[in-house]
Image (cartoon, rainbow over all chains, first blue to last red; front, side, top):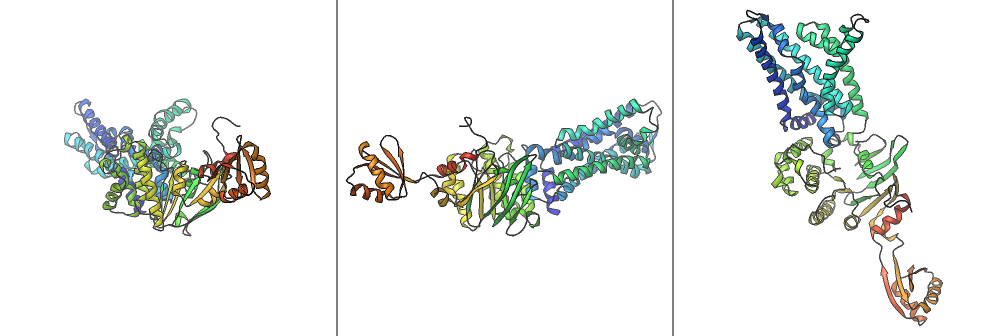
Length: 234
Length: 304
């Protein structure tokens, strides 16, 4: 396992794009925080627990998790997946390593975003409750990693990097919203079962149920992706 | 040694590889031949566990999943374009080197061996096909594996590089390693390979030494030309002596089952003048075409 992790580490760190996209995600978070401060009404105030998720949205997560798609998508696109799997025939280990390295990148990216946003907020004088930082950090990092896991899984299922990145976005912005608007009135509490909506809710409010609603289908999709990865031709 | 047993692969109702079994011995260059679409690449992928199918491939008695370090046992190069276009050649090899925990010095050594020093820190997206082949070969050679498995490695190489590759692979095998190489360059294969495995439509057609494969060809014969008036008499005498004789051209005979000396003596004994007496040795191409003619899946020029 250590060798495949070392392989993945070199694979990821030898490409600039591994860092560029997460950096964009961090910059977006910072800009969102600054813009929020500038456009807020006079005398505004917020707790850190609300302030951070308002700036660290799914858009930041989208960019920070692009390495999840690249870990699989680049290899399918360039044909190097056959090279990788010929060197490391234990596919479960390869799958795990390809998730582990982007997870580290995502944790770093999300943490940097949260810390930057928190610094902007707390130094503005309008944001209080610095003690909420650990909890809001866990929620933002957790949301990002789960988003990344979905991105990776869809990339594996489709063997397409762009599908992995946009698939989750389309599900969140279109499918969940569309379902809610079309049948939300007929089906009671439909919004309580939308994975990404609830994940965002967990990140914003700390409601643990939201984390579970996002976690369970994410793990199911990841498991399906793992089975496909193991059983299909490289 | 690599032992392949019962490899089978289906794509839907199409049987791409049909119960293939053969052995690749140490110290030999084994050529893997077959018409387009015969299943050569699929076979190699099955051997490496990349494609899911039936059958087993054992590397010195072990399955690939049981090997402690795959790259030290088998070095595979299946395609000249298997690299990220933006990752430098050196980083590509550094990445592959992690499997066997090879030091950076080994990467440098292989870069030099394959003549990639001037492009090592460049992105291979702009490489020519030949340069890409060299990068792929470099990757296969990194851990000095006991077996090299190469799919069309000479594709895109210039004549000097092909010559170098042939010498290199023969030397590699002479050190006790196995080389398993597929190629459409039959002339090169004839110079390089000691043993040949021929498949067509996914089935094994031949598995023999190069000498045996070539010797089987009907093109191993003697061409005899004589006066038109003497041809029939000479033909009768040769058939009577146990030869197989086929008319060829206006005044020629293709004779098999006798040497030039034998034919010369028979003609002399009958007082027949010979205008031409030429021993014809079949090439690998002759043998290959005879073996696979009826099994060619994708035929240029339509069916005849």
